[in-house]
Image (cartoon, rainbow, N blue to C red):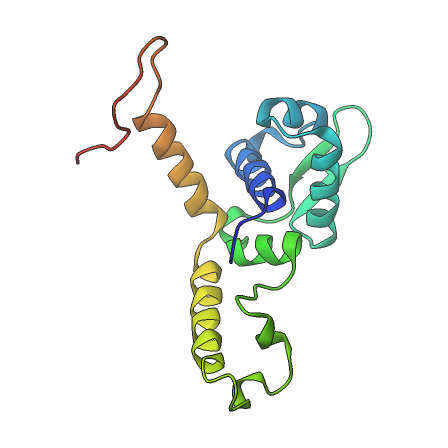
Length: 156
């Protein structure tokens, strides 16, 4: 089953937070971890992977921390997924040479087509669009203390 890992989920939280506040310069990892509710050691691991991939940049010392290394428009969901979890694969067969030619696996070609479609869609989604969705969600749905909504759906 294709499932988004906690590592990717936390990585996206981190990247969205940095993109929203990108004019603030570098942000301290301890403050980011507390604000985003990510264990500090895990945030460091995720940050290290994103730095190695050229998605983040770090600045040491007082006033240092993490910041995006390029614009949010240039960072795709596919890049983040593959950086933090490795290549997108929906079937183990697709890692084998000539998988789609095996007569015992007639579904391999279908899985390969689906995987290519998924990769294409993940590559279309950039960090800017994720930031826009996060801003919209927080602007539209603001919980009121003591109020439990029946549904979070919104009629537009």
